[in-house]
Length: 118
Image (cartoon, rainbow, N blue to C red; front, side, top):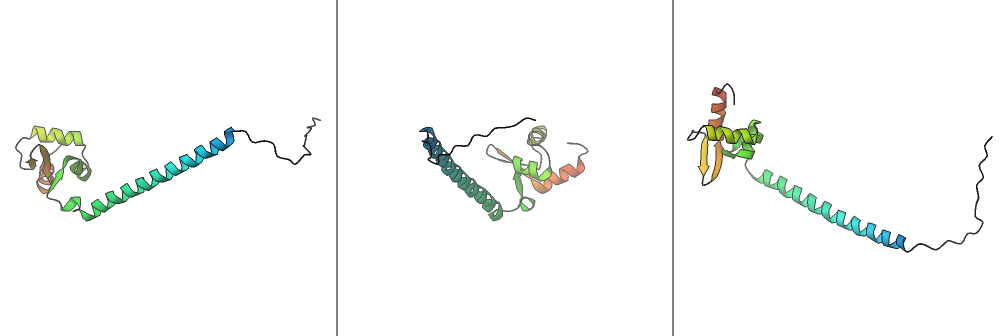
């Protein structure tokens, strides 16, 4: 049979700690502090986003939607929505505010009801 020999030290005095160990502990503490700060900032930003959504008018009650909002609401990609706007200049569901394009929600719903494909 194979036997394993275990050597145990009888002296109970601790050995000297290498210089690197305290520096590693300092680095770990510093990283933990930075991670805590980042987590606090992330939580603060997520709360501000939900607060804006709660204070604002819900998508299904808005008169006009931006392209990203319309993409979420209708389940159509933003690129395709931009193409639809470009293919139908002057359509009644398009609202141009300066250089921004908004989609009138109810009129675009009617357009989608009448369309066989988008």
